[in-house]
Every structure is written in C-alpha cells, then in structure tokens.
View 1 (cartoon, rainbow over the protein chains, first blue to last red):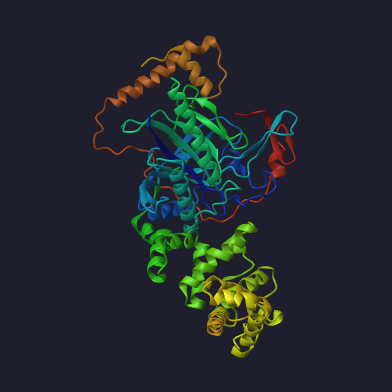
View 2 (cartoon, rainbow over the protein chains, first blue to last red):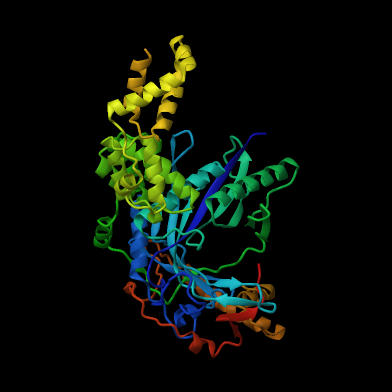
Length: 476
Length: 95
C-alpha cells in the first residue's frame, strides 16, 4: 500500500530578551548554576510575576511577519505539572487565547516549487530549569537559571508531508526568527528546538492516522532522521497488523531510534486555568503599528529583491538570503564590485567552502566583506587572474592581510606585458615540437597543455585571456 | 454532578496532597457541592457575554526589559535541604 506521511511541528524558540519573562533576572547563557534565578523564578511564596514588555513586542513582531493576527487581548494560563525544574508546580503559558493566531509561511521544496505551511498559533510561555542526573549520589541536581526564560511556542498546522518538508519549514522558521532579531536561534544552547507530531495514512484517505509526538529534537539533521525513523516504524507496525498508539516518544540520536515516553493514558492532566496573578494582556492598534515599523526586510522579500535587482537565479537568491548576515555580507561585496554574479560566485563558492571547512559562521569570517570586495576589484582591473585570486583569498583567510598587501608582498601581480608572455610561449613551443605537430594536425585539446606549460613557467601570473589569444596566434 | 471516591483520590494525587481514606466521603460531598454551584451558574444564559479571564477590569501592566535582580544564590540556598556545586539537589527524577 502507498502511505502518506502527515507532520505538524511545535517549535520552541527562546526570545532574545535581557531578562526573564516574569522577573528581572538576567537570561545570559552559561552562567554559574542558579546565579540567575531570583525569588520569582524559584517560585518562593508571595512572589508575583510581572510581564516583560519586550517579550510581548517580540511575539507581536513574529505574528506580523507571518501575516497572522496579533490578538488585541491574550490571556496567560497555568499548566500544572509537578517537576522540580519548575518549582511553582506549574508553567505559565497561554492556552485558550494565545497572542498570535493563524498565520503562514512559505517553504521551498527540492524541485524549486513552493508550499504554504499554516501556523495555527504562537504563544508566550516560560521555559523550565535544567535537571542534571549524573554524579549526585543518586540525586538530581537542579539549575534554575533557565527557569522563566521567555519562549515563543510556534505550532504549525499538520501541513507537511515528508521529513524534508519538515526540515525546510524548521529552517525557514529559524531564519525568520533570526531575521526578526527575536531569537539567537542557537540550537546547541537549546534556543531553538522542536517537537514533531507524526502520523501516516493510506494515500487518498481523508482522516488523519493516530499520531505520535516526538520530543527532544534539537538539530535539522535529527528532525529529518527522527521523522523518517518514526514513519517507517508506524508503517511497519500497521502492515504487520498492529496499531499506532497515541503517545509521546523520545528521539535518541545516539541509538537512532524513537522510544515510548508515555502513552495517552499516562498523558499529563495539565488542568489549565487562567493565571489569577496575571491580567489579560492588551496589544493596541497603535502598538501594532509601532512594531510593524520595526520589521526588517523579511527573507522572502529579500530573496525576491535579490533575484530581481541582481539578476540571480532563485536558488542563488535563496542561498544568499538564508540568513541576514550572509545577505548583508553579499550586498556589501556587490556594492564594491558592482558585479552581482562575480560577488555571488565568491560568496557562495570559496567563502562558503572555507566557512564550512573551518566550521565558522559568516559573522566570524576572517575575510570581511570589505576584504573580499577589495580583492575582487583587483580581479576586475586585471591586476590578478581568477586563479591567483584563490591564492590571495586563502592568504587573507590565514590572516596575512588585505588583498593589495598580499599581491605586493608575494609578487602576484598579473603579467599583461605581451612581449613577456610571448617570450615564454616561444620557449614552450620550442621545447615541445611533438605536441605542436599534433596540435597542428587537429588535436585542438592540446591548447590546454600549452596554456598549462606557460602558466607554470610564469608562476600562474600570466593574464589568461591574453595568453590564450597569443598562443592561438602563434600556433596557427 | 457528584464525585466518587476514585475521582477525589485522583484530584488529590494531581495536587500532590496526602489524604486519609476516612476523609474521602466528606471531601467528595464538599467538592460535589462546589460543582453543584457551578452547574447552577451554568444554567444562566450568557449568550453575548464575553468570557472573563480575571475579575478586575484592567489589563496587564508591562515591565521594561531591564535587569533588576542580582545574584542571591547563597541567600536562597540557605533554606534548601541539600545543595551541591551550586545546584539544588532533589530526589532522583527521570522520565
């Protein structure tokens, strides 16, 4: 039988505020345990939560960016559960009236087409602390620094039909929250994580199959692997006469498997109710207009502009707008060179390759946009050839300075002196009579051999265009 | 709506309350009475009335995003039963 996969994602993204959502304690990552957990975060008796203005603005900003309705009135609720990582005995979240309702984003599929994925809602809530289970003589250590950190939970519609689509959606959201500046999106530090609701159904069937919720997915690679594993598990189960149970499953990246955490019967009874400590949150029309004015150019707008203004292919435009940093870098290079294609080739080619090799972010690139632009200008004015440029680029990457200094110091300046090139060509022709004969007999491909020989003799510095032209003339 | 003793036990468990079996019929009666009152209120026609999330007719005041709390870990941990390496220690919990 042919099966169809149905996926919905819940993404938790940490908002980049300076303080907690309900207290004035700092949210910096990596502090000593419990040094950023104040009385409110510890749930000490008598404390009251006071909502962070910035968290509300960021949520509203997100809502506007996905074309959603930002609720003029939203309500915080208590989600009750007993676990020491939230000492109050409940998490403050939003339930019936979330701050962001109904939006959508567009994802790009592998075949270049696009698909709209609905966003059911996004709501504000507080994060829990961290539990450490090792090395405490059979006890659990609790660090409450993260407790109370603002989260935006983004819930998608079950609109995705493959693990690849789920990854594309997650990447798009990741890029969006970073463009908006509402989250650093750091996945290693847990600032951006996701749960996946996965089910399968016979192709053509309208009703959804029973879903399993996969928890604990913290990388793009894992989301794809976890979903693919789970889909296969469900299909195998059904085809061998079994039934998928509604349950929460944990993805174990080390063992590459999902395993049951709790079944529907054991599901938590959260007993949501409006938090009496917090009044309804109002966002007025003028607040929304003020926030709308702070929206940056969004990834899709930027992509379309890049394609149009710079004449880039859709693929190139989407690679160069994958993050705000890459886009800014690229535009700054173009500004210097005035050549969109050349700049795109270098940013997507050599620069990306080096960043990948050294596992670096573009923000930490040893070659700044100014440096790359400066080097490309030397290519454009024929001071260096494309081949030599690669050498210069590598030297810049290794911290040897700007392009001009490197070209000078290493004597890489391209030779455009016709007589100097001709002299080398004459030498090569004289030394290789056999090849000359073959070439003249019609073996055109040998031109490459001659170019190579002359280049070698001239340390790669001959102007390639001139060299080609002169060679052909001499050999004809 | 009348609660039975199993439901009372479940509610107590969810709230992590230890209760005596002997008291359960009394709790069941009291809680059922509260639900009875709610049922009575449910009978009122509330069409066109917006649900109320809070008895006060005001909205939430917001706080500027500025750090106002300093580290008081030593102070807070004085009342903790057990601490180590800056962490609060609790009986093992693992899911």
